[in-house]
Length: 256
Image 1 (cartoon, helix red, strand yellow):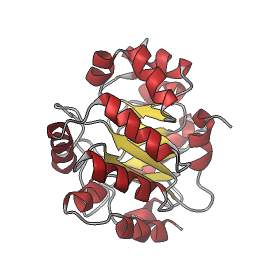
Image 2 (tube, one colour; image 1 turned 45 degrees about the horizontal axis):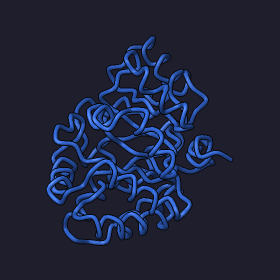
Image 3 (cartoon, helix red, strand yellow; image 1 turned 90 degrees about the vertical axis):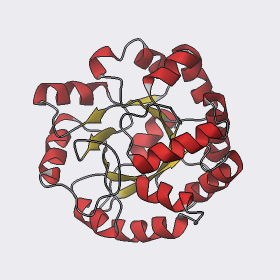
C-alpha cells in the first residue's frame, strides 16, 4: 500500500476517534526534536504532523509561533525538516508536513515534493494555499504521490467546501474555529454541524483541528469526526521540557 493511501486508511474512525499529534521540527533543538518525534511516533497516535518553522506563520497561535521561532534560531531548515521526517517515518507512522507556501516556493515546489516523498512523507498541509490557486504546486505534490490536504473552516461556503473536498486526498482538515491555533477550554458551538456538512461532500476521513487539547474534547468529537489534531497542548509540554507522551496517552484513552 502506498503512503498516499495509508493516511486515508489509518485515519478512518472505527467506532473510535483517531489522534494526530503535532510537533514543530527543530523545537526546542534538533536533537531533542528527533527524540520527541520518535516517542510520539510510537505513542499510539495514528499519524504525526510535523511543522516546518516559518517566520510569518499566519495560522499559528502564540505557542506554535514561539516553537517555530525557537527552531529557526537553532538553525532549522527545510532540508533538516526532511531529515527529521525521514528518521521519524522509520517508526512506520504516516508523517504529514505542515508548512506555508513561501518555504515551498523558496525551496522550489518540484524539488520540495521530490525530497518530501524521498523522506517517506505521506501528505502536505499548506494553510495559506487556497484551493483555487493551488496549481501547479499541488500538481507537483500529487506527482510525487503525496496527499494534498486542504482546510475547511466555519466560514467556508458550500460551493467552496465541495471544491476543497474534491481536491483533497488523504483526509480533509476541518478547522473548528475562525482564527489561529491554540488550546481552548471549550470546543465551539456548531462544530458537529460543520463536521456533518463536510462529510456530505467527501468519502475521505475528516479530521478536526485548532483548539483541541483535552480528553473531554476527544469524547465530544467521537462519532462526528474521524480524527482530532492536537498541537498547541503537545508543543507546550515540549517547551516546558516535559515528555508529551503522558498527555497523548490521556487523550488516546478518551478517543476509545
